[in-house]
Length: 467
Image 1: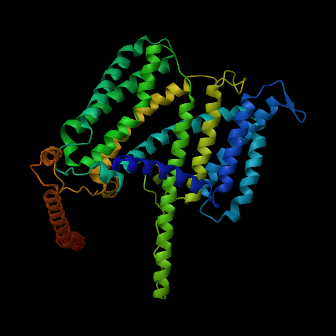
Image 2: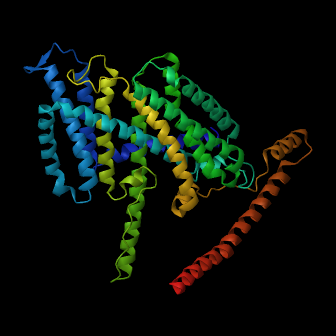
Image 3: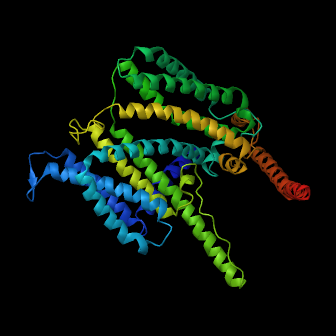
């Protein structure tokens, strides 16, 4: 395999292997097993024929109770994950079980609240998937290994974003689709909310098109890494717009598909891999601090800030990694209940019409289009005014800028093939250029970095005198 193939394979493999390692580790195993048991057991009951009984209990009763249990565990996972998980598990493990059991009985008696909780989890999870898409794009194009290979030989001041023609074609196609939605939104036969949301979502989709066109045509060359990440975040998130256009062309309101569930599971593993990477980093920091403390008695170690490296996981920056895992699993359980309703022909709750409406995925996609446009603006503003976000969204890569341009490389290889150029001499030339580039980079770090630090110190000192 080529470097690019191996790097992509390694990137995807790390997502699944690290995610599985985290979720099935001793610390999170009980949460993972609870999630798997409830989701699979409820799915089996929903698709099981209702005419049967098990141990004297009807399938309908068991299905209702299992759904109540799944939603109850989802709510308790989220609440405990957000507000209690920073305490040791021994203090809240038993209360979690008791409150989950009590909530199950309560929801089973008052089933009318379940669809609203499940629908809330459905929308929240799908919106967080959009946020995770930016993290996915960032870790794809901005990683030290894969990103450096993809940007190999490209000078930072040379040209714009990667794959600009492909981005441009997709963006122009989206402009046409958005215009089509605006044109047809007044002719839809559905209820007024559907028409209004379609029109508003199409307007936001056009605004996103304008933002990406400005990036591709004008500003992409200013920071090719960040604008490549942002452009592919837009491309990866276009599926919401495409689903809307497909439904409009077909004249139908679509439901859910099994692919949505696969995408959700992929992002669960991705979330676990990012949390796992962060936990390993924190453990290494704590170990280093303990060693430093043992070397210097009396000096307290610095407290590590448990902040996560993605916009989505930063929402959970005030909770422990255990709490973030619980929140993710809880949201996915609520999403799963709504998903089951949308893929089954008969309603799970016959007396309640909310989840039997197949417009939920359509509304979800409309709001998703609006969210993507909003996030594009937020990320651009954060890049402009937040040094912390700029450092995350525009990482330094090993570009190997001493390598020749593609055209020069092709010409040289043709010369070697014809016998006009010696490959040994050319390799020595590349090694020489590489050494020069390395010395230049080392000199820059040795001279420029201290000057920048002195400049920042002087600015702080000057501000202090003014105050």
